[in-house]
Each structure stands twice: as structure tokens, then as C-alpha cells.
Amino acid sequence: MTRFGITRVARHTGLDDIGIPVWCAYTPNSRSIVIAQGKGLTDVDAEVSTVMEALERAVAGEPFVDLVRSTSSALQAVGHKTDTLNCLIAMHKPDLGPDEETEWVAGINILTGEKIYIPFEAVVLDRTRDARYWMSSDGLASGNNVDEAVFHGVLERIERDAHVLWQVGAEEDRYAGCVDPRGFQDRALTGLIDKVETSGLALRLFDITSDIAIPCFSAILGPRECVPGSQRDHHGGRGIRLIEVTGGTGAHPSPVRAAIRAITEAAQSRLTYISGARDDISPEVFSRPLPPLVRRAFDAVPVPPAAGPVCDRAPGYRDLADLLQHVLDALRKKGIRSVIAVRLSDDTLPFGVVKVVIPELENPEGQRARRFGTRALARAIGF
Image 1: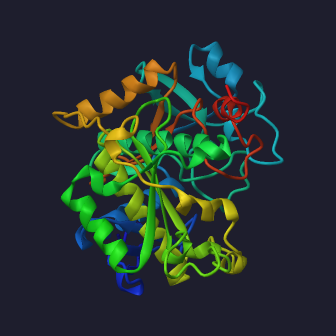
Image 2 (image 1 turned 120 degrees about the vertical axis):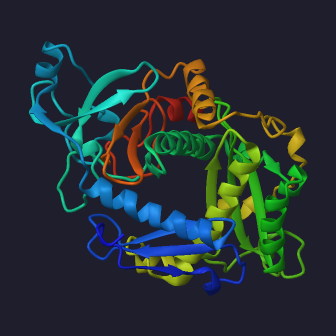
């Protein structure tokens, strides 16, 4: 941690009254945000999570990669595959032309095993640079080894894609997939729900699984007075601030694990606002009123998970390789042709960091020239 500028880690759990473990790591000279967060079922889980989050950001700010300065045309002329990743061009920036020089980094399309060069600025997370590409931690992941990091990165891209598709769909359909998390009959998941309800909060869990068919959930956590007909519902949730209702998403081949990830992330998001320490949140956020559409999430009536489209499927796997293969096969079945993994860490580190780019999937909200891709546009117009 000292090597990568992490000066301390802190247990933030007690700043809230839920009791779901959330820790933070501080990296004052970070090239992106200073505060990293992690959550989990135990303190050890959450502490490791936040340290890994901080380490992956530190590595992504100054990756251990070999750079090639060239043009797309020149690389292709000597037999290399390239992708200029126009979907990640930053707002007010021009697309990269075929004969424009830039720095390239080699990744692997893990669907085919082929090497492919992509612009370095689409991979690095260094906000001190004036980059042509939108810089984000989307698809950035760490793990005990590179394979584990790739698995987490691919799942994050599937999760973000599913969340965008959920948001752009018809309003009347958005909250239709509300499931009762107690219906999974999982001890760890039930323990999380008990903590939420004991603290006087309300939770809604939505199945937002996309056509890729990897289980994905979105959790929305807020004051109990948001629920219609509750004893504290004096004004239909009016007067509640946006920061009092937080969300989280999670994806995993196991529906239970996906649900746990969503709920713990919603709890982590609460502590983002309670601690007030994150350096990427403006003061104005703390006074914004809760949008009516978000409040209406609490109108949804939960149904047993077995009635949902994917919640009743919990296949078993032998190991991480099996899990990753299952996820990649699901992408192939939907016609996804490119899953690019760029290794950012080197062999001297006791952990792996990768950046996963899946150009055909949707990206989360950000300062990009192209807000939506073809999947979101098709969903928005009803195809």
C-alpha cells in the first residue's frame, strides 16, 4: 500500500446505522479520486475490497504497459488488428482518424485469443491528462490474479450495460421486475435484509437482467416513508433529498451473489454521502430533491424470485475458469464479437489489474461524445 500511495484505511460502517461493513482507503496523490470504497459481508471483506479498489486505481493511473506510437493505418499495414474505440471519445473531442498518431497498447480479445491494439488514453485513468478519450474506472478490475481480475471486469461491463438498458426502457416496465430477496432463502442475503429493516429503511430489489442472461440486480435503498401507506408516509415521500435514496447494482452467474453485490453497494453509496469525503461529489448534490421517478421505485410490489426470468437459475461451477467461460459464452450467444482485456499490472505485483473494454455494450453515464450505443437506442425506441 505504501508503494502505491495509500496512506490509511478507515472503517466507515459506524457512520451509518445499518451495520453493513463499508471501509475506505485514502490515496492523497491519486491521479483520479482520492477516496476508494469497499463493502462486504464482513469487515475483512470490506477492508480488502477498498484496498484493492485503491490499488487498481493507482495502477491504472500509471500502468505497467508497453506503448507503441503509431497510426491505426500503419499498425494494420503490418498485420495488427486495431480498434479506435470511437464509442469512448470524450465530449467535444474529435474521433481518432486512421492516419493520426497516438499511443497504442496491446490487449487480447479473449473471445478469440487475438491481439488487438487500442488507444492508451482509453485505458489509462489519469485525470491530470487532457485526453481525447473519456476516462473512467468502468471495466477496471483487480483480483488475486489476472484471471480473477478479468472475470470481475467482464461482469462489471455486463452490469453497466444492463443498468443503462433498464434506465432507457419504458417507464411502466422499469419497476416491473421487483423481487423479494428473502425468497432466495440464503442466510447471508437474509442477514443483509434484517440489517436494513432494523435500521428503519426500505429496500426494493429489481431484476434488471439483460438479454445477455447473466443475472443482474439493482437495489434501491431509502427512508421507510417512501413506501406508500407506511406509518411515516405523511406526504408521499415529498421533501426527501436525492442523497437519502441510494442505489447499487451487481452481476454474477449466481443470482444470490448478484443480489448481495447490489444491496451492499447501495449501503456503500449511503456512506459516500454520510461521510462527505468523496472528492468527486459537488456540494450541490446534497440539496437536490428526490426525483418522482426514483420515489416511485418504492411503489413496486415484490414477488418471489422464482417468478422472475432468471432468479430460479443457480448453476454450479467447478472453478473460476468455468465461471468466466460461462459468461463469455453468454456474450457470444448475443453476437458480441470483442471482449478486450488489457493487463495493467506486471508480474512483480502480488495481484492482477486489468482494463476490460467491450465496445458493443453500453457504457454508464459520462462525459462522452456518444451517450448511447446501438443497444440502448434500440431499447429506447422499442426494438
